[in-house]
Amino acid sequence: MLPLEVLQRAGAEITNYGGSGMSVMEMSHRSKVFQKIFDDTQAKFRKLLGVPEGYKVLFLQGGATMQFAMVPLNLMGKTGKADYARTGNFANNAHKEAKKYGEAVVAASSEDRKWTYIPSQDQLTLSPDASYFHYCSNNTIEGTQWQYVPETGSVPLVCDMSSDIMSRPIDVSKYGIIYAGAQKNLAPAGLTIVIIKEELAGHEMPITPAIMNYKNMIDKDSMYNTPPCWPIYILGLVCDWVESVGGLTAVEKVNIHKANMLYDVLDNSKLFTVAAEKGSRSFMNVTFRTGNDDLDAKFVAESVKQGFTNLKGHRSVGGMRASIYNAMPVEGVEKLCEFIQKFDKEN
Ligand SMILES: *Cc1c(COP(=O)(O)O)cnc(C)c1O
Figure 1 (spheres, rainbow, N blue to C red):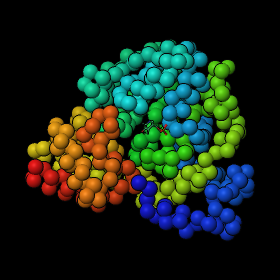
Figure 2: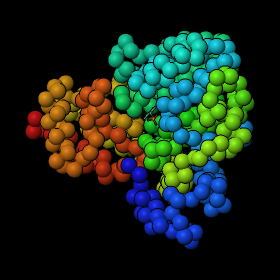
Figure 3: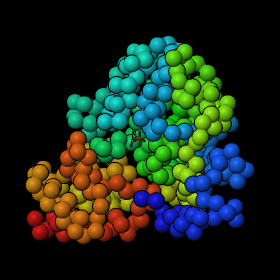
């Protein structure tokens, strides 16, 4: 979801942005009017996340999936080796991609219990000579989330935050790179955000395409080629909205409240079990099931009739998944809780 206020403002400005006589969709990315949108969005985003000096924020394309290749292409050449935590579909895809560029070591895995938990700090086997340690902070499909930031000493942390960025305050200074596809919590599809500690750029492998070169994108301020102008503009509006509701501390409070409401109802039901283990449960994607495929299908079918959307779990894991990103109002979760309780009683 995007906040309704954001959609309404975009709607009001859609044919004539700020008296320019143009839609943001029609503007040259080199125009003054768009440059201001770009700069303002950068400033708002940096402020909200508390991005410190020495870090650049890049607005790129290619999705989080392009970062699966871009990270090793730019960083792995340092030692030829990197650590990966395998905790679910996207984390595993990142690991698989990195193997093409060097030694991608499995530093942790939750495969033994079907990706239902996050390994603890003691369960990480860290390589001291890794160029970086990669993990995915929220496993969107499986519904697990890291509740701590891994300690990796002098090895830079690289994190795929696609599905929980801006859902809680973070300490950016603990990271080498944070990246995220925008379409879960920030903006429409098409924008990928990279927060990078500047000193990590400039060590890319010679085969690195220019469009996938962090140093090149830093030097050109994300405009080596045309950036995704429209989603950048919407991100600016979403930042205004987050600010207006009290910033990340307030957003986190609401997110915890929403998720706990759902987990409580599920834990107290007769029919449903939560897929993720306690202590690893996501505050963004709540995954659950009845243990009976027919009953799961019935739940999803009835939910659609009641006006809920996207409660069917990802095809690779089945069951159900409620994605309750920032813009999902508390009332939406309350309605879902009522529906779950009613279904539990009647079935
Ligand atoms: C959705 C998602 C991706 C894939 O993003 P694309 O923008 O489609 O490449 C990667 N990682 C995580 C954690 C995601 O939620």
